[in-house]
Length: 426
Image (tube, rainbow, N blue to C red; front, side):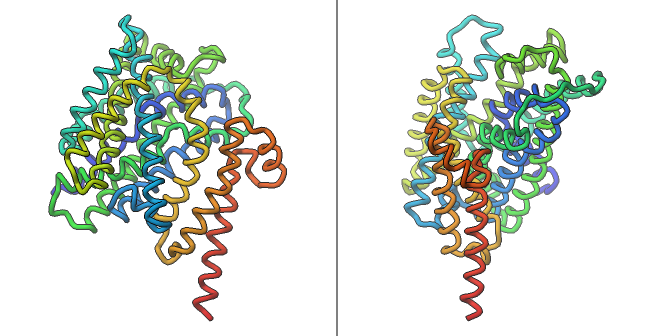
């Protein structure tokens, strides 16, 4: 096995599995009004959209199992419920969103056809790939991702090399923390626990004799390369939008903004290039979600290929139905679910990356319980329960930024380990 070539192909495949609809439309949107603080917005966004997801890949490299393994230290029941919630959210929101974005950017500007036709063809092709999953790494890593990178770098490069680097003043309140929350909308932390399992299984299918150590090294290196690629693209898109701010209306939609940026930088050919990019980026993410969900159900039904096929077909049918809603609507209705499940996902990723010495089952359970407890107020606030927001903002640090769970989780981790050491000493 050519280690360098295998690492690059796997990194490209991982990048394309991560890089979907939200990764395309959110960075330019948050960069639009970032002004001179574009770099601070980029840092905040990259924490939740790159650092946490890549840590999730590192956790997969360590566990080398499925999403179920992320929560099994709490209890098998918790792990099962968490897994089902994650897959339900992934199938209901980000997978259909990829079809909606594809239609709004890649199809609607050129063809006057209903979105239902786009969704049917789109998810039919997703199903073909999902049912031939042993070829996913080669196809994604060798062909689709280089095309995505080429088009994006062209858009970013034209802006950077032709701009005088003057910025307007920002009108974003709390640019750092607000961009962290915007990173939730990429679904990449959720994507990490979903597509990380796809990556492990695909590597096993392709290299049946690879050892645990080699597989762990391959996944970790691929994760680092993919993270660097995402950092370059996210930062570039945020900077591009900040530099071109004066060219666009303040109330422009996410998809219209991306179209406008491509037209401004690449001219009339820009929208055609962008159409290809959107179709590729969204398509690869949808494949990862559907395949990951089908893998999990297959594993729960004693490795049944029938269960895999039924789940893949069901996921694609649901994608067609949900894909009829526009992008902004899907993003809006996803917020409450993300405010609840994202903190749990982040803490599970962090706990599984840490050495087992610091994450005994008791510590693991305590930290997860505290995270769930303190993420409830953010969830209630996101659905409009004003009284909760007023109370938590007054008494809970960081809750004003919808990050009220962070400090309690950190305290629970510290106390759990201090009490463990004290007990061991005694």
